[in-house]
Length: 161
Image (cartoon, rainbow, N blue to C red; front, side):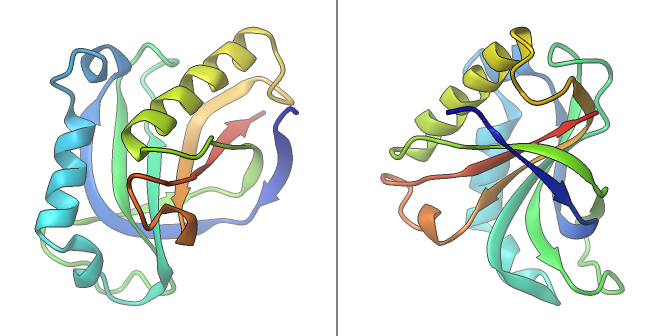
């Protein structure tokens, strides 16, 4: 089954950010695992005020080009108010628009998320996402199905034109 298409409303998240690219992430010395470690060890989620809910969001934005270029990776929470941003954190706006939504398999989060991205790239190559990728903003949703890192399921929202 292919992705479902949704019209997503704009929302904001507050979290920590880093700049990276997929080549770096595939070397085993990527930024993303270090960001997750920092997020968990430093209790970042608990430091974010005005959370809409306990769901963790990961936003990919500021794409330099396509899946081969640099992008900004932000991990945090959706908020109802952006007036209080803790030190060392940023506000990232997820723009309204059309998104192709894919749900990962169930399993270890560090395996299922990269597998889901490989699936997205293969669908993108075959133009099966429901439209060309916008390369503006994509995001992942870590909700109640992701509480156990050994048995997780994640939704991936891919911005399309």
